[in-house]
Image 1 (cartoon, rainbow, N blue to C red):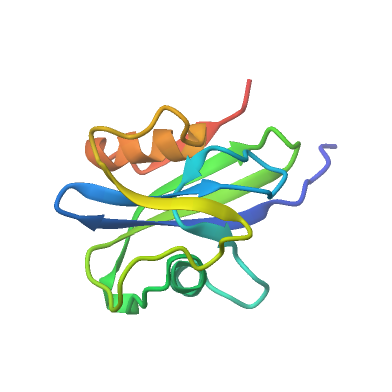
Image 2 (image 1 turned 90 degrees about the vertical axis):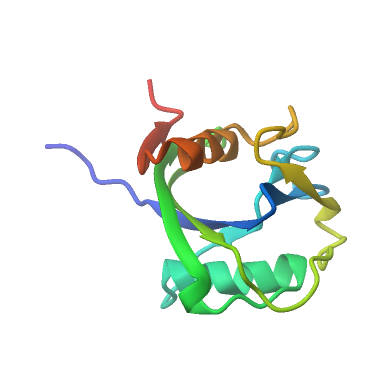
Length: 146
């Protein structure tokens, strides 16, 4: 009989404007520091992926996105390098209120716009894969499995 494992869940939001996307460079977190990622975070108990995405974007880059402006584009089943298993939900948003800024300077040392076709080399591999899927309209992928 197979054992069931617990799966964590996270959400990522690609803020898109003029063929550019907002990325934040991780700093002082103990996980993938120095690499860029989308605004992201764990989904809290009792929270939907959509609600978590809206919350994380406001906490990390200071903009407010309405639910109707969030659009699902990908889900990843990820076996993380830290040994944890995740289901990662990816959304895009093309409209929001406020200006993008670094709201978590203790965990992020750079927030900037990158061209969708010119992402940095130091980007989380799973985020890079999802961004490729955004362009190809493939909605499911697996990362870190043998």
